[in-house]
Image (cartoon, rainbow, N blue to C red; front, side, top):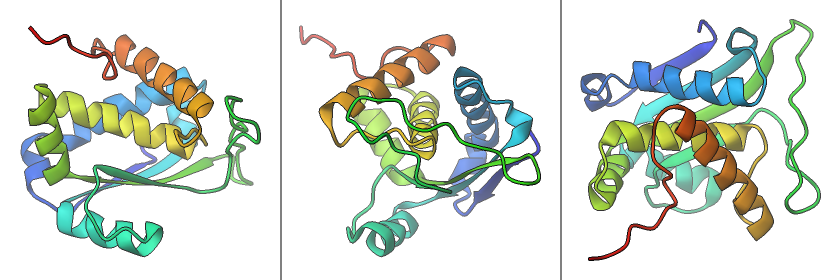
Length: 171
């Protein structure tokens, strides 16, 4: 996958081999969306909480860390709640520029520990989640959230991951 640009700002991402997990998540998501991975352009910034908090403040007015942020290259969101977003179109060069994602190691590690799953599995989920945002999916309106979560579950299921939204009963 030559058109996946991964910028690693925090060395802890190297230790968990973010490149491998990102490629797997990207290829699975693109395949599920019917896109050739060699036709899509995506960049991922693997950073820490300080950096993502700055980005969150700059772009969303929320000066706090978060797990993942996405910047679609263009607006593709559906007009009506629960509808599928517009399909991305190739540019003059035949490539489809989807956009950029930032993901924070610190928040991912804390969240993975909190839900009791390996960080690699949680990161895979968040990359799939971020990619779906690049495709125009969102979770602000309930019907949109239902659609987006369903896609995440389907994609992750094909990768052998459990449903991240399934509630685990307390014993």
